[in-house]
Image 1: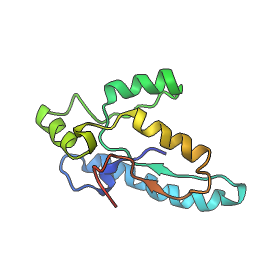
Image 2 (image 1 turned 90 degrees about the vertical axis):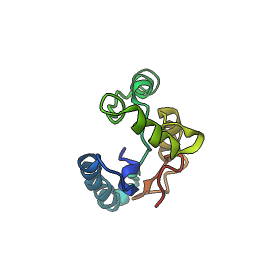
Image 3 (image 1 turned 30 degrees about the vertical axis):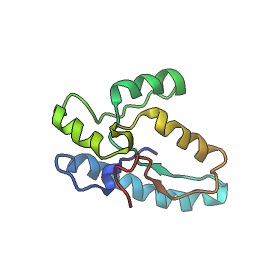
Length: 127
């Protein structure tokens, strides 16, 4: 499941967004226990603020999973985008290309990992 790094951030203007993702994190933990007997692992990935203009196209064409990760641009001011970029590696937003390898790993070699929220966000937040 995809959640948000804002689960570990104290920043304004995202209360409803982060609040809507928090139950998914709890759902991940509960369902991971319920599906354990069937050898199904369940995890959440918490990316940092994403460059959604590039991400949607990547998911749709490359991964074939049209996922809407509506987070950035449109409602963001240039100052807000600059602030979020400054809090992560390389001074940039998260890209789907940063997250896809984590998803692949969890579905293959990482099958022993379950019930976790993995903050793959370039250091935007820690927990």
